[in-house]
Image (cartoon, rainbow, N blue to C red; front, top):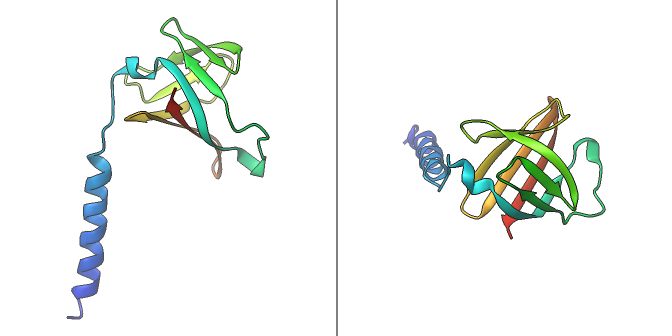
Length: 119
């Protein structure tokens, strides 16, 4: 009985990680192409974004448009990160279903985090 609680907790975390691993993920780079709408945004240093609704358009020709501001981007071969031209840091990305998760670390405890839905 003494080891019962720690074992239950271990099984719970194991089952939780299996569920997360089994979620629909993609390695198909073509899934990022198209129009996405921001529904969650966390900026570093506690900066509050006035306009939390941005439209991101990823084109196959390497152009990215964010609220009508165009730039170029490169996508890694494994589709796990992309870099906007002129930016030293990259965004880690993951697509699960119709949701695009993006994060970019700027300092050990500060990041940009975006969650977008396919539009």
